[in-house]
Length: 344
Image (cartoon, rainbow, N blue to C red):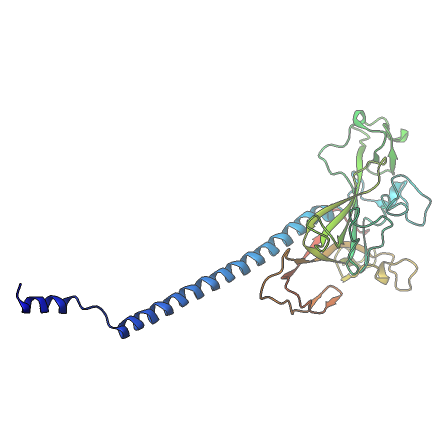
């Protein structure tokens, strides 16, 4: 190989210069920074979307859990006339049938098919599970009273000693009873004189400060009476993550016989004077036809880089910004009472 050939080979083997290498590294670094930025932003967007979706899912599940119960309030079987039910009693009456650990006649106060307290837990039974933190201080409570809506009423052969029942008959009085036989005046049950036996059901919703997920995780809870008079009203967790429940009633205030009777005129808070006997503003003909509820839902974990600076205004609440790292959403729904029948 000649000298000129070796020189040509050396010229072909020459690499990039230092400047070219630095330019290539700079371009690669910018591309890498861009790729990492896009990845981080995509991940943050995914976390935000997932967090909001979970909040929405929690809210929908909570609303769907309480809606069927509220919708069936005031269902008494073969009668819609609460005044025709014998054995019902209020808190000012002597103790009647059913456990009273949540308050005197809490399970048989049928004159209040739906009942609520405004911004506080007022039941006599302890709130929350044993060792829990009790009820939320400013949350409402809601009680729904009705009877079982099974396609078939309870047959006489299946009546139990320690179960609270309501016996109803169209166009006649009805009666609350316990035991293995309906009241004598309802017997025999024939096609010409049909009568139904149904189990008394009462559910009270409230917000607890703790849940199965921890002492600092609030939850929607309920007190449940399923007809068993031998045990106290039970306490159950419906869903963690609910930190507030607010209630308003849709009320028909039109006089009986008026053209607009049967339509909602206004929404009021629990304990409103128009629903309070003895108050100067009490309206005897007022009838609750719907329940509007609000639920404030909170994420289980804090979100890095997020600060909740929103003010929450809903129902009668005006809550200052929490200024914490939990994400929240408020969901609302109006539920009409299927069995409310205002006198016309």
